[in-house]
Length: 121
Ligand code: HEM
Image (cartoon, rainbow, N blue to C red):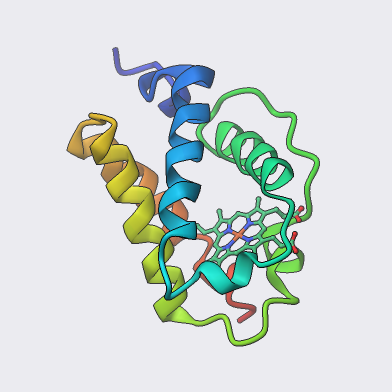
């Protein structure tokens, strides 16, 4: 069904909520990047990430967080290595949940398009 949004193809709200949970489990288990999340309110963070992903995948628009440049400006030392680690977990999460390769690639290319904002350049 070519005219389905990426949001629908990924399985809608339930699937994206489940993916975000598993995604942060992986991130918090990774010594390369977990320190950025010290003191972050994770339930709130998950809520923002769910809303953000739903929006960029063509689903409902109810994201009210900061734009990605402002949202990461305070993370001292954040660099490409950290960004790559996060993409690795995003792809790994989706594959573990059985999302087909073509859709995983679409998600990763959307995520990749945010790199310069997240890394403040
Ligand atoms: C695909 C790239 C990324 C996306 C789409 C993304 C998305 C988001 C969103 C939507 C927020 C909420 C912004 C707000 O506060 O309103 C956020 C916050 C945050 N992100 Fe990211 N992010 C990305 C990459 C990264 C990377 C690479 C790291 C570090 C390894 C990171 C660490 C954080 C942290 C620690 C916060 C919470 C800041 C706080 O509340 O103090 N993010 N991110």
